[in-house]
Amino acid sequence: IRELTEDFFINPQLQPLLETFCDAQVAPILPKAADDLKRTIRNRKLRFRQPDSPPDEADVGSRSPPFKPFRNSDTGSSVTRVLKRSHKKRAGFFKEFGPEDIAEELTILEHDLFASVSVIEVLDPKEWRKISDEDSHVRRTSEHFNRIGWLVATCVLQEEDVKARAKCIGWFVKLAKHFEQKNNFNGVMEIMAGLSQAAVARLRNTWAEVSDKVTRMLAEVKLLVDPSQGFMNLRKRLSTVDEPCVPYLGLYLADLVYIRDSHPDYIQAKPGFLNYEKFHLVATVLREIAGFQRLRYRAASENPAVRIHIRSYTVLSETELFERSLLVEPRAKPV
Image (tube, rainbow, N blue to C red; front, side):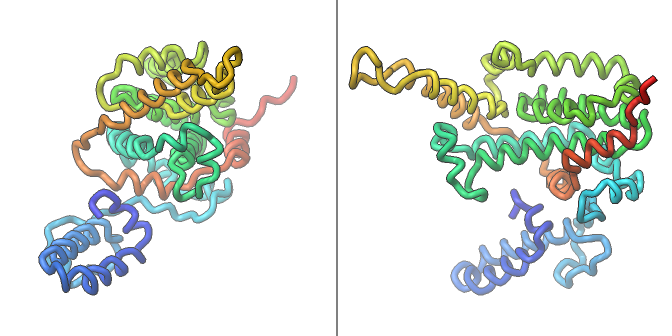
């Protein structure tokens, strides 16, 4: 309940189910534990209760202030709905929280996703593709990565004013730098993926308004995750990290695919002899993954509001993003 509070807020049906389970199953056997559990439920419910909902009788007198979360009023993701949103709601994501808050919570979330990936999933792509969506940690990690990339592009393009878009880009570049400071290189890649989308990259007028300071910061981030020579700069950085870290999982998946496809299982000149070099290379990759999975982050403070904000934010599809891009900055008319 403490770690996944946002799930109970997003899906309120879980609350009565848990309370029923507590009263019917836990209380008869462990009454003290049941009381503690119900107290936790009440405290969490109060913290995440909608501001216009009446308080429960058990909650009256509690000192914990109610939390007012961001609520996206649109259930769809059409460009028309986006244009009708108020500026406050459209820009709420990066104005509601500072980049430090987002970096802190996303880093912990993304490390949890990375640490949940099993050896079986990364060894053979065929295996994790067979696993259901709910159980595949590789797929969940990939979907999260893509969603953050779409979210970055959506936030930038939802700004109608060119200077506001440039400011939004600057906010996400600062977020990428905070990710880098926390050794969350997966987060850095997510931000770069969003800013590199065609719908954002083509905004010449917007990029011209980006400050020199942000431009220099962006150049540093680009150099770090430069894909040339097999992400040489990123690999060098990873080799020096001895603290909690969220590496880019795609880097290791690509390595394992290359090793598997370029090295036979058996030595061709000696039938029946295993190719030790291949399995040594595989073991080296797996050892590095396991090492980063073991080192866990310690949260300075719990801030589930950030996760709620991210999960509830409506992102635009690729087609909608490009439509929006052409709307805010039309193509130049041919001379």
